[in-house]
Image (tube, rainbow, N blue to C red; front, side, top):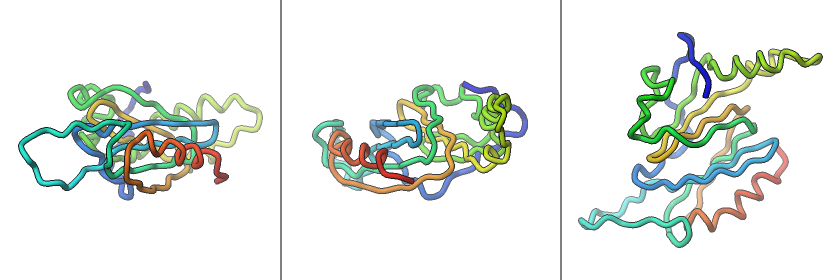
Length: 171
């Protein structure tokens, strides 16, 4: 995890679909150039009084697939019950959403780490975005140049081949 200072500001991010607040079951795939994230979106079925079990293998749910142009990411805790312990809590980070971190300490740290390279160009880092998506049981953050979104219907496991194709596709 990174340390934040008084410059980090979190703002809502448009263009990334809302995740299911119950069981989005996010799945991450990455290589040295891209990160692909898939998760269940909310369904709009009427409430029957019986909780629905969602499976990564055999559901027929709406799915968001987000391809991030960049390979630096973190995925794991905190979950929704401990999100208030995240360093960006109190800066605008909230439950179940997508956010952009302006003046990111993480990007500034990456730029400093890279400054030892003889061909270092700080301008490369100032074009990057620090994004955060908060889910029920996890948080996903990445540093990227941009992202693209597609959707599917089915199960998370069924979109794995599509995720692999997104990794292989040239920018």
